[in-house]
Amino acid sequence: MKPDPKAPKTPESIEEEKKKDRRRFWAMMIIISLLLLAFIIFQCQIDERNERLAEGQRKQAFELAVEKAQRMADSIKRRAEDSLRRAANDTVGEVSPSPAMRDSAKPAKGAFPATPSAGGTPATPPGDTSALGGKEEGQPRGTAPTVTVATDSLPPQPSILPPSGRYYKPVNLRVECGEPKCETEISVGDTLNAVKGKIENYNKTGRVYFRATDSAGNASPWEAAAYDMASDNNCAENSYPVSVKGKNVCVDAYEFPNKAGEKPRNMVSQDAASRLCKDAGKRLCSVEEWQAACRGNSNSRYPYGNSYNQTKCATDLRSAKEPNRSGFAEHCRSYYGMYDMSGNLWEWTNTPAQREGLFLVAGGAWNTQNASSCAETKFSFYPQNEYPFVGFRCCL
Image 1 (spheres, one colour):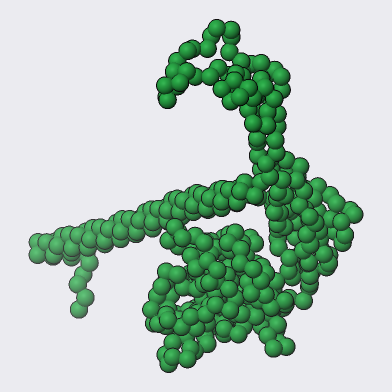
Image 2: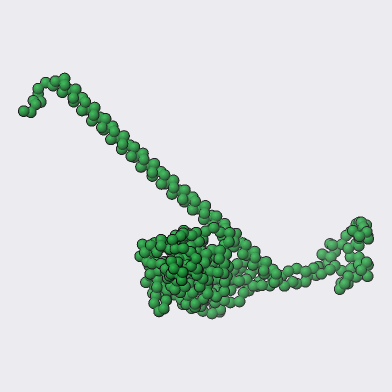
């Protein structure tokens, strides 16, 4: 039978209910405490994550500032070296002082000290050439010697940006001079329609001519850059078609992760590089595809031409300890639109080397100088190892 709820409660039942109430209270307190503890742990993890993100952003900002300072120092160094080379080839002109300059150089009457020279012979007053037989060699008696000054007669060496090649969107053309206070000109199709400064939203296939005049009035000869404005790109974002044996292969414009302005991925093995490309729906480029993208339609030795130029790509940063950000070297662009294929990072390929178990890497690193051509390959890197100077890009 069920107990009668109206029946009076015994002391034992009252005590049992109190025990149950106490157990329920403490169970509730434990649950609340656990929930509070979980909340505190979760909040600490959130704070720690936010602190890591903030620290990463501060570190990235600092690295970017250091990198910019390093690039500026390298640029100043290169410009100083160029200026020294230019100064060594400067012509020397002769300038005779004016009568006022000659008069100002004469001492007041009686002001010249009669101090002996180092050899014991009384010093000769300015303008007095009697000790030389009455006149200096090649100079009339009483005239000051000719003053020589160096004059700049070498023209600047301008370059156009973005560099010549194939593009799929309009570009903004500008000319860099490499010297302070230069005046630049651009002309489309010929040299008869020159405009000063830059041309925005250029979208024509053909030649663009450019030149520069420095502050001394030296003008460079007209130079030409050829642009091929296309619209048949069926590749993914930041990836462009490259003709390889009559077929188009989509090659990433930048070293992995294929994003302009980001640090390219290094410290990655060949196996890991292959997996990362596969995860992105692509594959690691073969050395044949890589070299075709680098050489362009003219089969040039470097992405920018046949002659090595240390100012074009990240190949002469001997004091650097890591690569440039992708696309930082604007001139280092191949005809098809790939950046940093000369220097910056060696790049893994999926092409086996002649030595079993090894794969070819291509292109050179940030300090390999002229050994950074499109044809440059090595097989001395073990595919299971990670190197700070080796990265990769993907193809499809």
